[in-house]
Amino acid sequence: MRALAAVAALAVAGCVAQPTGVQAQFEAFASNAATAEIMADICPQYRTRSSIEAMTEQWVDVMLAAGHTELDVLQAVQSTDEDRVLDGVIARMGREGVTPGDTDALCAYAGREVASGSPIGRLLRSG
Image (tube, rainbow, N blue to C red; front, side, top):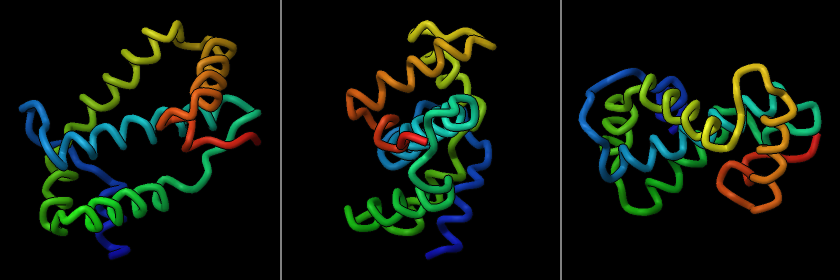
């Protein structure tokens, strides 16, 4: 199980088609986790609740508990286009008024996510 989580944490670039099913769920998780990690790295008042590896392991456990096979999860991770995920993170930040180098806007965005209890906000804690 830990090996699968480690593989998931290192998502490799794959196909270009729009994701569905488990792959779409992984991409959403990866986007949220990457966003939270950026926020925690830049905003001194926030930290991630756990390491990216632990968050990924929890995601894998949820997928397995939902009835997906280890093969489904592994294929979803391997088929995920990392650049598409990162492009999505950047686009979402832009929609939230965050521009490169604007720490205040990023930290304000983090605060809104925490306050709303969003998936990103649930990955963060006050530092």
